[in-house]
Length: 402
Image (cartoon, rainbow, N blue to C red):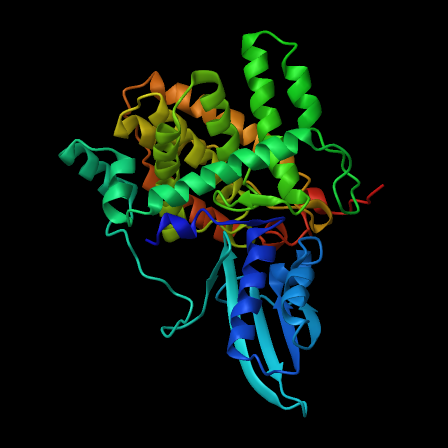
């Protein structure tokens, strides 16, 4: 498995696979061909189907156009076998002669991949174990817990990086709570985070807690939808869940930054396992791989903060993902707004519920986290493509914006 630095990516929304990934691919292609006069980019499958709503065209054109003209071709009818988010870059010289052609895939969370054995975008693995069962056995054998496994595998600067991640998460919440007005796009969706935050203060403790966590998740997701700076956790579309849970727990329980960073490491390890063994791409496995995985990460992080054993943490992560199985990715108008923003708020609350449920248990249960990850992968592959970030089915079907 790769470093957590490749799971938690600091960048701008609205989509890690449709905005951040294509922008990075364009930058890499430009580095290879600085003398090119013009470019052509062919977008396939999900990238073509919802690319305009996710600003894929803006990300690519803004990167390449300073060096030459850019032509985009949208091929939503073609799904390349390797991954639904395929794109082909072509560079041309001053005489219009093709210099090079490169097909690359945006596989979720801002990560890129090439088909074949000679990939130029692959980075080294830093984790020797990639299943929860292996890591849980290591924890039981050594007496250590998940964040300590992260510490053993990562470079020492991982804590500085996670501190930057945590700072960015907090900033995105606070910006979102202070922002009002309408989100960009054809839906004309009004921001809700500020109102939810104010209304929460008028309720008794239990409802206030739920209202506050809603407001924090809404704040980050709305910032993402507006193209603000966020952290993929594990994706842009699911970026509100982890920050909401950790921010709420630190505010309400006075957890130190050190303990929050350890919780981020644990949650990141959960997301890393799913990314390695299945997928975090909505275009490949639906929203279960985005919001479902984010909920699982947050449930594990919360359970660790409350002193859960390795077995209890694994249980919290398992049930949080299990109860998102089959969730479709059907963004209305191709925007990361409906149902994405509300799903982040509900998943943040569900993560806390999974934490509580696991805390009452001894951590022993029948269905393992690894089994749920495998089931999620298979379920995602069985879903028709119209339910995997194409806006051709589900909630997005026949919706007419106001």
